[in-house]
Length: 212
Image (spheres, rainbow, N blue to C red):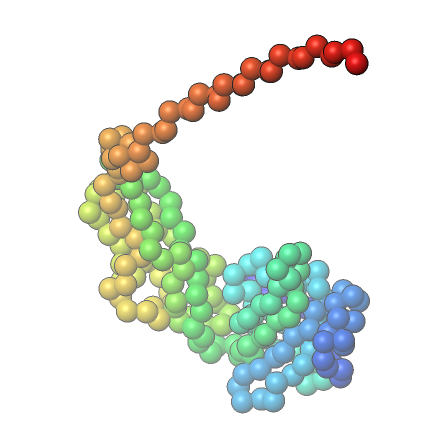
């Protein structure tokens, strides 16, 4: 996976007010930790962070630090619940050659048999991989899988140098019988008949005004 270069600056002010000022300036507060170092409080360019986080387990090279550039993986991201903007990022310091445990997406290709229905239990799986060689995802081809067939973690085809960080018998997906039309109808139930509109009461006859 390619590295994303990002300019980092050290934060000297803390608290909610300082964080709001950084966000207004288009930067995102972040904390870098790991390898026994004291956590480093940083700010990162907001737009670049937003783009980088579109890639799972993106490897970020932090440039501009006093001790030299560092490599990091996003471990926790706080977003604005309404706008979706990034509010804060926790970064894990990593070194070239070391292995890390990460969750990678499991993507499915192909179609199961016509009378089967795919039931995917895991949309991501934990693996151990070199920090600089994390796979973007793991594909599972389900073409022609029959009802009753299943795929466990042990069946996944992992790239070289990548190993499972979960039990090998964990179920990833299986094929169950597709429901029949009768079963669907029984589950949904018959739609209630449309209620007839209520009759409109007849208007009372107007009374003739009597001369006083």
